[in-house]
Image (cartoon, rainbow, N blue to C red; front, side):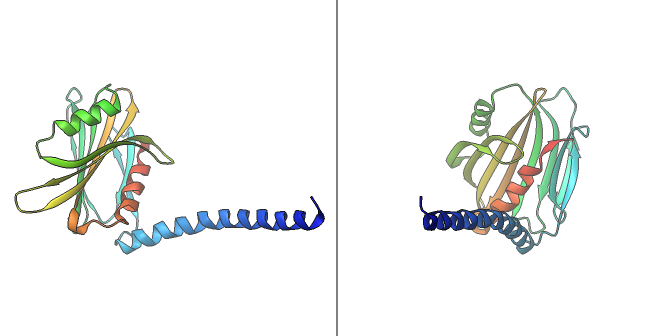
Length: 189
């Protein structure tokens, strides 16, 4: 390699490094802008199931906790909805040792609403991984919903199921940022 090629290569590598560093900065700020655009100023942490796990929801959302008996199939339930009821859902801590993929498939097949366009896929984010089930439903009033249900194995025979119901007419791609932020917040305390 001659001197000219070495200089050009060094400049290109330096520019790639600068680009990689600034990309992380802009991605973080871009997510903050999306959250603010959706009227979310911050997140509130909730300690769930005997304070063993933590999940964060937007501060503006309505969250209702319901604890069940330890020996029941669902040992903990939390209902949530945004201030405009465009996003509703639930979080459950379920007592099961079943494989997540099998459990997610069975849960989808056993629901009481008719569903269509279903897809079961693995997901992974920086803080956790599991199974994502996406499907659509419609109800008698003519409302159609996009549903995203996440399953996370927390060990000790506990699985977290978190279901988001979004009205199809209100669904926007930036809603994924809100959902990803909530799912990423789930952890052991």
